[in-house]
Image 1 (tube, rainbow, N blue to C red):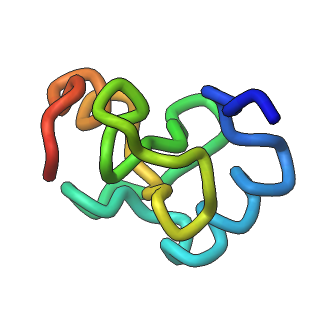
Image 2 (tube, one colour; image 1 turned 180 degrees about the horizontal axis):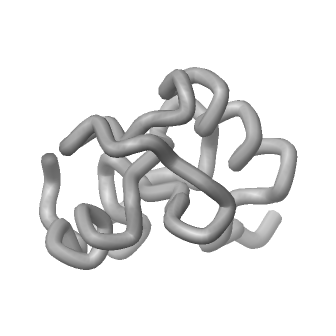
Length: 70
């Protein structure tokens, strides 16, 4: 089975709900326009595309984080 790089719509909703609709780094309120589902352990470093490995980030924090572990 091929690994998926992107979270599914259902996974994104679960990650967003678990975060309380706030960025897990800066705590800004998340909207569909600024929400990014991010891999805690980056996909490029072997992280799975699974809800347990996802975190809700705003676009700004996700772009700053890149493929680092945080």
